Image (tube, rainbow, N blue to C red; front, side):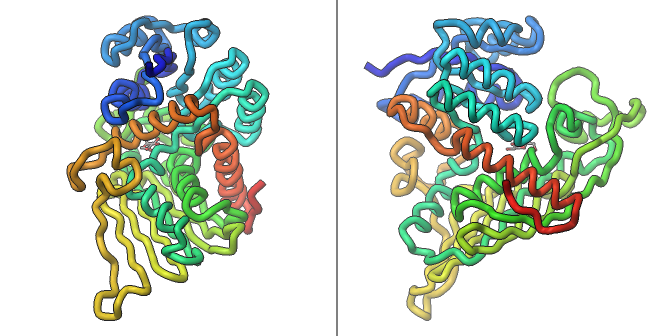
Amino acid sequence: MTKVMNVAMIGGGFMGKAHAMAYASMPMFFWPAPAIPHRKVVVDVTDGMAEEARLRYGFDEASSDWRAVVNRPDIDVVDICTPNNVHAEIAIAAAKAGKHIICEKPLARTVEEARAMHDAVKAAGVIHMVAFNYRRTPAVALAKKYIDEGRIGRILNFRGTYLQDWSADPDSPLSWRFQKKIAGSGTVGDIATHVVDLAHYLVGPIAEVNAITTTYNKTRPLQQGGVDKLGAAEKATDAERGEVDVDDEVISMLRFEGGAIGSLEATRNAYGRNNFITLEIHGTKGSIHFNYERRDELQVMFADDPADARGFRTVYTGPAHPYGNGLWPIPGLGIGYSETKIVECYDFFSAIAKNRQPSPNFEDGLLTELVADALIRSGETGLWEKVG
Ligand code: SOE
């Protein structure tokens, strides 16, 4: 019999929606499922918000007291979907209570917090995961397979971008994502860390960085209410303005421990770009190109193809590819954000079932945080900065 595991989800916003959908859908896709995640309790800031989330996301119970919930003996898994400022406190308490933990990205605001979280889960011996979901896109996992099989050869170069435009309007509100005390950093922590996670997954550890960081909009209209309001749809030009004390954009050169070189660019101010995560990897035997806005496809070039057929080919991911046994039966039916979260959920519960740490876990999250810290330091000093 597949084990039922009770989940306490802390945070009922954008990520809460994505995780709740994954809990409901994972066994529908991956059967037999490694476990059945049961939506037991959802926690939000007020009782009213929690009750709304309970109704909407299909949990049994609602609460506004995360401390009481993570200590309940009937909870198996604690899922942290809050803004970054409470990740460490909740994760450390959940680890002490012996719960398995999945935590939204970035793992923490600072290296110190990430280290404390990693120490806590290690001491507790629980399973832990950080929710960098984009490596769960089948096309990205296929790129990893080609690389691991040596089909691209030795990696020479990595180019990663994450471009969005939801904060390009200077009158879009001052959400928590623009406040250092809550977010830790701006674009660096929010989206450049996704690129760092993908670089670590596909190429290996980043050793040093040389970055430019900048803040285009030094103030933004204060936001009404605590909800995470992304973008200009909520703009309030006549509202009082508050200070933005984080970066809007980062561009960096990279050196990898394994000898490859690369670059990373991330911004939330690129008009016309939505979730433009691109990866290009050049190796001694071929190249790979991926664009999340065309996420069913992997572009791949094998240098040993016959001379008259050389060039990038488009592989549409499907049953023959990673996670193809659980997802849709025909390539091109469409992989979406939800599918990445469903696969993430499957990998997390598989790790619990096998009692083996998944990746990326809190150790990987800490390594990514060390790179984020180096990017910010380098943005300030203008020098190459070592990671760690
Ligand atoms: C906003 O930039 C955001 O919601 C990020 O925080 C997520 O990690 C990303 O996947 C989508 O955009």
